[in-house]
Structures are given as structure tokens and as C-alpha cells.
Length: 167
Ligand code: RP5
Image (cartoon, rainbow, N blue to C red; front, side, top):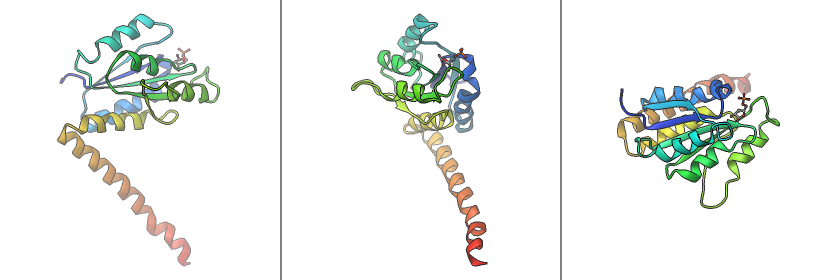
């Protein structure tokens, strides 16, 4: 097993069904990752330790997801100099996800969190792959192939849709 380059963390195990979509994308691109639970509110010292040690352990990017009053991505970003990708999760305690979106998105100047759409852990995984791929051509190639597949899937639908206009 190679050393993890991306750390996926989430505020609660209840975030896992969403957050594992980031893991699936990283697996597809062959990016080594680790995944765990780190709660800003319930395990604040663990969060500080995780963020403090992340770079030294060889991580290059952190993906952090949380719902409700989602302080995990922002607080981790305040401690580490690694790029942090935030995933707002529509959790059981959420007001339609907006609380989490705004908590993660509206960071003060100087402490950015690259925020993806609500529940968009898949995009977080792709984005983390792209960051790693910027200095790893084999991973960049896999991402290019993935994008080519996306293009092809759309192009495959064109004849069927256009046929509706030719009836
Ligand atoms: C947040 O509160 C977590 O990230 C989760 O999205 C939400 C609910 O947590 P549980 O009550 O399900 O543990 O901190």
C-alpha cells in the first residue's frame, strides 16, 4: 500500500454514505487515500492533531465533509497549509443543507476552503485527484480519460434527442 496522499474526513459516521463517493473516485484514479471520522465539535483536539500532522504524514489534500453547523472544513483549513476541499452534507440536523453550505462557503479572507455543491463528495474526489494529477502524469491521464467518457456519454444521447425534431 502506498502512503495516502488525500485525507478524507467527516464529522460523523452518518456522513459516510455521501463521503464514500469521494473515496470511490480516488480509487478509480488510483490516488492513495485514507478515510476517517474527525468531529470539530465532539473531538476538537483530534481535529487539531489531524490538521497539524496531515502535511508531515505526507497528505497533499484534505477533503472534509460535515452537515449542520459545519465547522470542520474551515477549522482544519485554519490549521493546515494544505488545500482543503469542503463538502456540505445535508444531514439529519440540517435546514435543507443551507446551514452547512454557508458554514463551509463563507470563509474569511486568508482561509480558503474549496467548497463543492451540496452532497457533492464525488466532485470533491475528482477535484482532489486533479490537484494530485497536476504533478503526477499517470493520475492526470486517468482524469483525462474520465472526462473523455463524460463527453462520450453526452454525445451518445445526441442522435436520440435530435431524432425527436426530425419526426
Ligand atoms: C455534523 O452533524 C456531522 O458532520 C453530521 O453531518 C451531523 C449529524 O451528526 P450525527 O448526529 O448524525 O452524528 O457534525
